[in-house]
Structures are given as structure tokens and as C-alpha cells.
Image 1 (cartoon, helix red, strand yellow):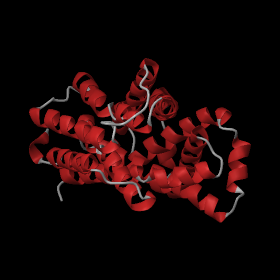
Image 2 (cartoon, one colour):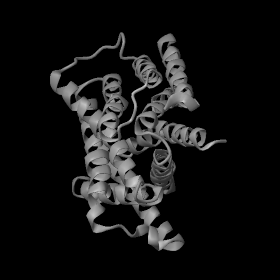
Image 3 (cartoon, rainbow, N blue to C red):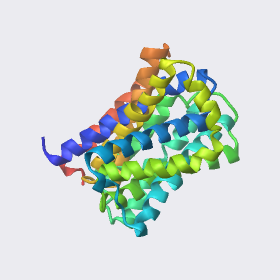
Image 4 (cartoon, rainbow, N blue to C red):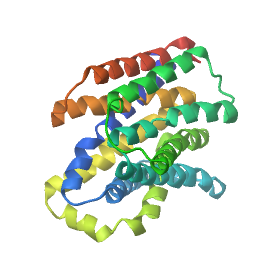
Length: 293
């Protein structure tokens, strides 16, 4: 498999793992943890596991130049923390479907920012894939024909979540040019975990973990299987492709989340959702082509 296709595959796998996060968040919500606390668990577990792993495997990967700390403030605070806070706030103000669609305005923002920052070409194929992916996301989340009040504040905060989500592809690409995927992922979550800790009521998290081994396993899987691994894969893919392509391929996440909702939680597969899945899959295939640049 050539590098281009392998990079696209790693981004698809990362998106698929992200799409399964609902399994763990719903379980931890059931233990009494709110969204900020679940985010802190994700960040803290990821940071601790990576620090231990790198101390054992290769301590040199934990070395960064002090002048580059702004890159990890970008990935950790401006992206991970900011987009999560905005996203969770949007969920409280709007329907979940509307919040999801606003979050997935991120690839549009990434593609436009990449044209300016990285001089990335905005080809017809990329534009077609972007339109197909966003249309697929709208259909998959069920916002068409949905109910719920839409407010200007909710829309603005929702767009903020998309902007924060988009910033990972931008800062992550800049960081990936200087450091390995493991280094970028480690410092992203170290910074995010430290920043969120004062707002996460850590004693409540510890209390939830004391519920038993199932709770601990869910926290570890949340931090490793659906956070550490996919972010490392996504960052590795970013090193080998344009941020705009990577962000659109990551539209596979809501597609996978929909499939898991149907298979695990018994949610109904509507014709619109099925059409959305097909559109998202088509956009991923388009951007995996050699002529997608």
C-alpha cells in the first residue's frame, strides 16, 4: 500500500475509533460524571499512559523546545479544551443533531485555513468531497425534519466548537512537522488535562472510579482506545497528507457513530441516515484517490 492510501487509512481508523466514544461516555455519564469530567478522564488517562510509555521506550520523545510550547497550547487548549466546552454547551442549548452538524463545519474551516496557511490547493475533487461529506453528516445526524429550538447564541457557540475542532488539524500539522506523532499527542493531552483539572471536580471522578473494575476499565478504554490511539493515528496521517483532506476523511466519525447507535443502542436507521452514510463513504473514497491533491 502506498503512503497516500496508508495515510488515508490511518485517518479513517482514527475517525472510526472516535465514532465509538458514545459507548464509553454514556456509561460514565451513568456513573454521574458530566461532560467536562468525562473529557478530563480522556485527557488525563491519555497523558499518563503516554508519559509512562515514552519514559520506558524513548525518553527523547518527551523533549521539546520551550519555544514550541505554543503549538501544544494550540492543540491542547485552543482545540481540545475549547471545542469540548463549546460542544457540550451547544448540546445543552440545541438538539444533539444540530450540535453535531455545527461541530462538523470543522472540515470546511480546515480546508479554507489550509489554503491560506499551507497554500493547499482547493481542487474541484476536494470541494466535491467536502460538499458530499457535509451533506452526508446533515442527513446522518437527522437534523432535517428534526425538532427543537434553534437560537443565534447556540449556533454561534456551535460554530465555535467546529472552529476549535478545526484548530487541531492546523496546529497538529505544524507540530507534526517538528515532532513525532507520539510527542504531539502526549503534549496535547498533558496541556489539556492540566488546564481542565481545576474545573473537573477530581474527587467526583475518583468516586466514580471506585464503583468497581468496570468503571476503571471504561476510563482506561476511553483514554486509550478512543483517544490516545486515534489521535496518534490522525497525527501520523497529518504528517503525510494535507490537513484539508484529513479533516474531510474524518467525516467517517459521525457515520461510525450512527452505525454504533443502531447496533449497540437500538437506534433506528432512517433512509436519510443511510443516504448520509453513503455520501460520507463516497467522500472518503474520493479523497483516497491519487489525484485528490
